[in-house]
Image (cartoon, rainbow, N blue to C red):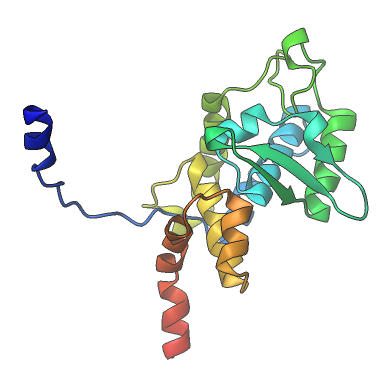
Amino acid sequence: VALARQMECVPLKRAVTRTPDYLEREELRHVFAAVDRESAQGTRDLALLLFMYNVGARANEVAQARLSWLRLDPGFRHVRIVGKGSRERMCPLWEVTEAFLKHYLASARREPRSDARDRLFVNSRGHPFTRKGVWAIVRRYVEIARKTCRTLEGKRLSAHSIRHSLGVHLLQAGVDMSVIRAWLGHVRLDTTAHYARARVKDAQKAVE
């Protein structure tokens, strides 16, 4: 107890919190354009990237996504996502995402192994994706896009940057913060508020 009280007296280290990098809409188009849509692998990768952006999914959430969680009914297209702490959320799917998912499932999805029959995305060997596998796909096309999009130079981007991009874009579109919080599955609203700090350009435009 005495040692615990001493430890409680140690102040927390103050550190600068870095605002995460995200992709502007035009930069995101360059990433999508880097995918070869004529190949089966490219069809899968583009469907995966669109799904990831649409849902604002973490890499692990993409890897764990199930076919049985998809609902492609005309009235309400959505998908169930299981995130951190086994918390569930429902995310709407855009028409373009639905179209690419259907195309992928009909023509490009490899025959899954027994342990991946209900997985939405499977790798080239029919096994379930891992978080690192999803990271590798994002990294590959971001690096290709850097060659044609100069604004990507100097940005520290990862798979999580796709999730940050959706949060910023929803905020820019005027979507209420509480809706974004539910969409991304944040527990605390101040986590969602991080995206407001990335709107410096919008503030400058308003000043001008």
